[in-house]
Amino acid sequence: MAKVTVGKKACAVNPLKMSQPIGGAFAFMGLRGSMPLLHGSQGCTSFGLTLFVRHFKEAVPLQTTAMSEVATVLGGYENVEQAILNIHKRTKPEIIGICSTGVTETKGDDVEGFLRLIREKHPDLANFPMVYVSTPDFKDAFQDGWEKTVARMVEVLVETPKNAARRDPKRVNVLPGCHLTPGDLDELRTMIEDFGLEPSFLPDLAGSLDGHIPDEFVPTTIGGIGVDEIATMGQAAWTIAIGAQMRRAAEAMEAKTAVPFRLFERLCGLIPNDEFLVFLSEISGRPVPLKYRRQRGQLADAMLDAHFHLGGRKLAIGAEPDLLFDLSSMLHEMGAKVTVAVTTTQSPVLERIRAEEVLIGDLEDLENLAKDSGCNLLVTHSHGRQAAERLKIPFHRAGFPMFDRLGAGHQLSVGYRGTRGLIFDIANLIIADHEDNHQATPDTWRTGEGPAAGVVDAATMH
Image (cartoon, rainbow, N blue to C red; front, side):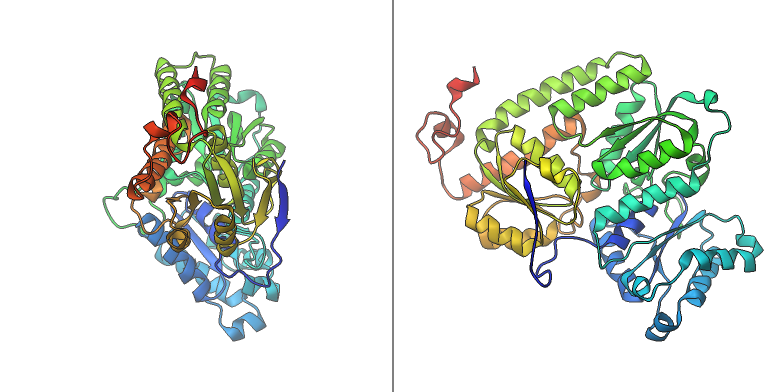
C-alpha cells in the first residue's frame, strides 16, 4: 500500500496538473453541438484553448464570458447573459456547458441564479439545455473537473424513466474517465458492439475529437452524444464506469434512474480485460468472440517478449490519478518497479498504486525524485520532455497535453490490443536507449553477461 503525501512547496515550480475548468470544458466537448463556456477572464480560456488545439491538432470550440476587472468586482451577470445570447444566436448550439474559474469563484457569482434570471427574461431560452458546473481552478485538478461535469450532466440531462420495466436489455451506458482517448473509446465501442450491445458514451470524445473532417464548417463540436440520447440513458440495462473518477457519475445515474452500474478501475492489462469481457458476456448472454481469444494470446506473448526489457527497470510516472493507476499497475505486472509516482489530486486509488510513496506534486518533484532514484524511464505528458533530456533517460508521453507528437487522440491503451501496443512502445524506448548508449543487448542480459545481469533469467520463464 502506497503512502500518499502532499508536497509542501509554496508554489508549483513546473506544473504537472492541468486546471479543473479545463477538465470540465473537455467533458462538454464530448456532446454533439456543444459550446463549452468558461466564466472568467479571456486569458483563462485562451490558455485552455491553446492546450486543446495543440494536443488534438483540431479546431476546438471554447468561449469565454470575458470578465474584466470591473465586471469581476461588480458581478458577472451581464457578461454571462451576453455570452449566452451571442452563442445561442450566432453558433446555434444544441447545448451550452458553463464552467466557473478561479476569478469568478473568488467573487462568488451565483451562476445558477444567473441562468434562472436569463431563462425568465428570454423565453426562447426557457427550455434550452444549459449545464453549469462549479470548477474553481485554485483547487483540485483536471480529473476533478471532468468528474464533476459528467456527474452534473447526469443530474441535469438524464430523464427519470417512467417505467423501469421497459428497459432495453441491449442498451449499455458507458461513462469513460478523462484518461481515455478518442482511440480508446473507439476500441471500447467495438468490443461492446461485438457482444450485440448498443453503447451510449457520456461524454463521447470519439465522435467529436477523433480527427475526422466534416463536410462543412461547424462552430460547435462536430460529433459526440446528443442531448436527446442522454435523456434516454435511464432506459439502459447497465452502466459501465471506467476509472475510479466515474463512480460519482455512475452513482448519480443509479440514484436517478435505478440503472445498476459496474465500475472498472482500469482496462490496461491482461486480467482487467479478462474481467471486462466476462462481464460483457454475462450481461449479453453471448460467448466471448474468438477474435478476443486470439488477441489475448497475442498479448500474453507480447508480455513474455517484453519482460526481458522491462523487468527490474525503475520508472518515474507523473499523471492524473486514474492514468497513474492504470499505467503503473500494468507496468508493475510486467516486472518494472514504479520507483517514483507523482500525481495531481487526491483519489481513492492512490493508496493501491504499487509504489512506496505517491506524491501530489509537480514536474520538478518528478524530475528530482527520478534523478535521486536512478530511474530508467520517465512517463508523463509533453511538459516533461525537458526533464527527460536533463536526466538522459527515455521518455514516454502519456496524458494531456501531448503537443510535440502527432496522434495524441488516437493513442490506444485499453483492451488486449491497446495493452500490447503500449508494452511494445515502452519496451522499444528502452531498447533504443541501450543501443544508443552501446550497452549490452537483451541477449546478453539473459545469459548474465550484461549490466542487467540477474534481473531476468531465461531459465525461470519455464
